[in-house]
Image (cartoon, rainbow, N blue to C red; front, side, top):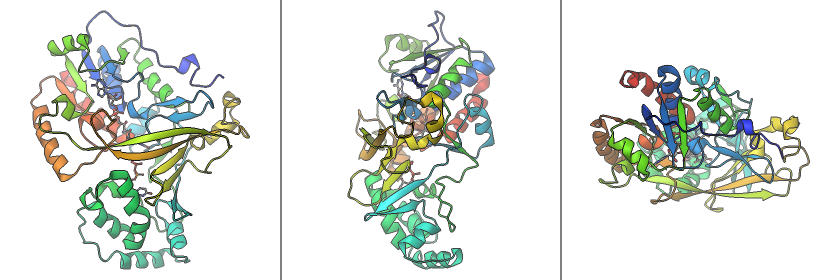
Length: 410
Ligand code: FAD
Ligand code: UDP
């Protein structure tokens, strides 16, 4: 089956290994590392060695085309691109086009399905009512009176945004499953990501631009590397901490951009930063359409999974695309791929996904960042290096800003 995944022009291949030493070593081929590599190679003409311990580029944004169905599956959890940052949008469009996909999510609560994020449709369905926007605002105002004026944690923030009944139905148990940390200990910022709307708009994101890379994430990232000619050498399956050749570069004090976990870099000497990890249980189902939407959240403690992703819904345009004619994107294919997402506390050896970011974590991070500031040739960046809950656009923006700040040093 010829899909964009096994089409050789879309497959990542490392440019041939060079004999000369690189000018810059980048640890981690996620979006932060890729963006830095592209800028350093294309704008400064420097030679970059980009390594990753995984066997692919793209970090957590990586996706692959499922061999049985030809459906593009996001290996580390669903990734939807959205941004209001014009600089980031212009930057990414140099390497890929985007589809017109608009993300919509639904949530099941006690056997009933509601639109998410909370909007007038959710409110009216939940209260079996027909409130106007102003009536709904008045109701939520009344129901949020128990929350303090300046919320200091997720529970207070959530109640102040949507009132206690909606918080208890749609946020409390979902958050408990997702973070395994009481909402009273979590940062209010986590819930501020979700819009609350007093109209029937149920777009998940509020951003100006939204879409998915037309030919998949891997093709996008490979284009970034290809745009640099032979300036970037990619080596995969290489761990910064235990590869002898990399060790030599470290000993030479080569300029390094490190996008792995900052506490691991210092061998956890002050202790571990807390992360949340996830388990993704993938299955091929013998139906055309499993759930009728890309993502279904589960608000209650039972079932234990937080959400189910159904990847074919991320690319509805592929159903009519002849390039996908013999894949399960085609109508009446009788196959679909779903992934159940379970959240879990991170332990060493698991993939670190989301920084838990309690007050203790922030104090610990400060200690590691003090050490990092004194490094001459190491720059820390990205989600793991900065211990930051960055969306893709924020990761790219952070890398572009870091490049501008440091380009003289390269
Ligand atoms: P990463 O993608 O984590 O890349 C870091 C890389 O460094 C990894 O490939 C890792 O293997 C490598 N590395 C680490 N240590 C070493 C070492 N010792 N040696 C060699 N290599 C090493 N953002 C959105 O905008 N929209 C979404 O829908 C979205 N969904 C998400 C869903 C989940 C489950 C998660 C976890 C994140 C989501 N994000 C989303 C955020 C997005 O994944 C990040 O913004 C982005 O991946 C950050 O890129 P990065 O380069 O900083 O980190
Ligand atoms: N959230 C919730 N119920 C939902 C969706 C989100 O309680 O149906 C809360 C939860 O605490 C989550 C946060 O809102 O961590 C941010 O949600 P988002 O979907 O942005 O999280 P992500 O996609 O990054 O996992």
